[in-house]
Image (cartoon, rainbow over all chains, first blue to last red; front, top):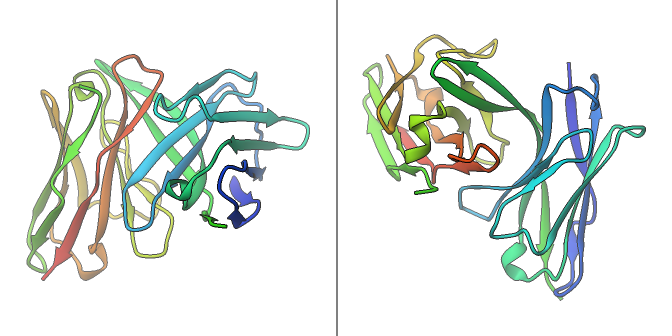
Length: 126
Length: 108
């Protein structure tokens, strides 16, 4: 079955760039059925969608983070990546990658995230 | 509005039925999906679509929708159901993703 694994530095200095990679195993990253997503969770808080990417490179970002976020995909390596620039302590969070799929049952559409990576804690501190 | 609203906390007696709700304008177009998160763990998909559960999720979890409100019902809550539950949907444009703030479920 498909598994996702986040990797990257656990400590980033303020004003620097946070960079994380998610490696997909057990399945294709190049399927037209999925978006690949980054989600974060501040300590003790709820889930915040950061953005997602289609295998072709199409991206969508949370408007509140859009000016600082870039998500990219490397289909050959079966990886997608997150870059968040100009970080502050407010960017300290557990960062998850997940697979996003869309379905329909009239009159509704729906999406679901499955599987998720285990999450990686990134602390922003000098 | 572009947000999903959940009650912060709900409690239920062991073996009883509890409903967790999620409200938002996007739910008139997009069905809510539900996740369970226990401390120190990644969220786990519980129910999606009309009433789909991944393998391993018991059928005591069910969903319903009315207008702008989606509900997750746990019939016969068990101690292991104690967790935070999140709803999500796309926003009305279909291009963004929304999460509710989460509902902490306590099983008494």
